[in-house]
Length: 278
Image (cartoon, rainbow, N blue to C red; front, side):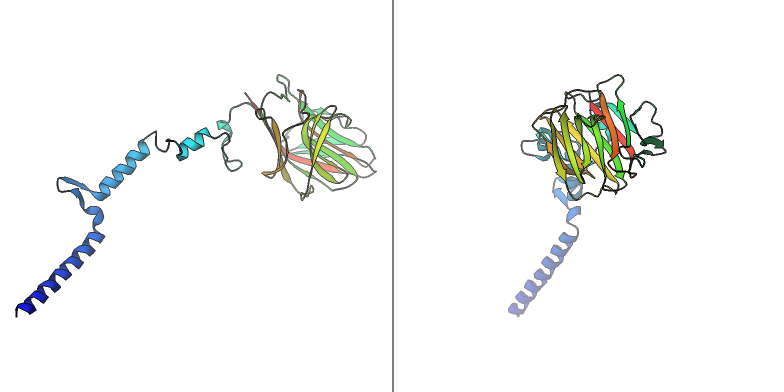
């Protein structure tokens, strides 16, 4: 009899422990921290999270995320993710070519430049040697100032791929004999990034870009370290970090297309953006 009672007691105790364990699992968050503290575990966790979120020095210890973010020389973000008003630029110029008043039109022969709503249209015309070309100067500032970082961007498309040459970029490019600045060019059927200082011209070939499709072309220049990076559709395609950098100059934007046979070729730019460091 005693043996049966003992087994029954053990069985009953096991059932109680199982029920208590299950209840504890289901109601763990509502349990109190201690016998003398009525704060529940859920409340204590919420309070700890809030205190962490309100602590201005969270994650700022050596090796922690915010401290690493703060001390790194370069902080990488997806292209376009930082609003313009967060940049340390003192000069911001944007245009959608509603007008080209204030631009200088260097078109010649049968070439022409026409502004439209959201577009700049350059054409060579049908006579060999026809040039469509416009440039703009900074009236109260140095457009190409090599002591200041800048960001240069345009969206552009060209009608075809042969029997012409084309340039679009920053600096002097009008006479096609001397170049001072940075830019993109299409010569001999090859797309290139270029850098010139009137005397020397350095180029980098760019492949796998169909110029007859619309692309976003960017030039990003930094002073320290001194380098110019060239992007197409957000992808880095060329870098100049040594060599003969350009001289200071007034021109900060130029577009040019010239035919080499008696055929018409067109360049269309739909926007332009320029930012210069303080």
